[in-house]
Length: 122
Image 1 (cartoon, one colour):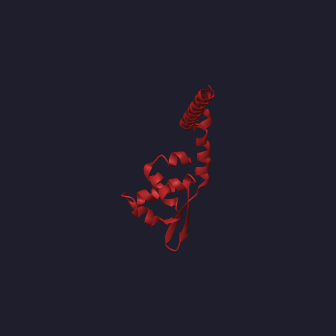
Image 2 (cartoon, rainbow, N blue to C red):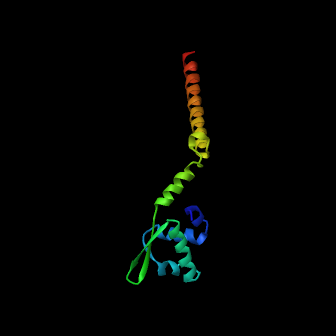
Image 3 (cartoon, rainbow, N blue to C red):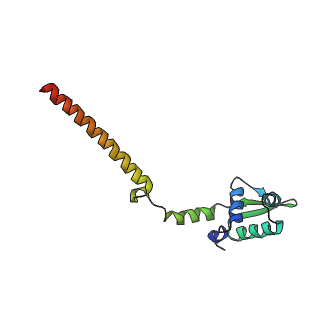
């Protein structure tokens, strides 16, 4: 299963978010959700098969960790669809407006100084 497909489910996204801060035991993950432990086990299996999480056994506990590599690949792919500021995204339009406002202020100050200097010379 592809990472994007695995992340389509809100419970699996929440599990990934929970693992973003570090390793967590399966029991702790299950305790965070109002679904059965078998359901959480299935979600964890899907995430593992998609390469998004790894697991290890520590005594009688299974510990899960986030594998960020598939997320980095997904982020790189999604990057193609993000508007670049230089291509007319909202940030560039605001920057352009800011620039024009500064130009207008500068032009007004120059005109005002020029008018004052003309009156003083005349």
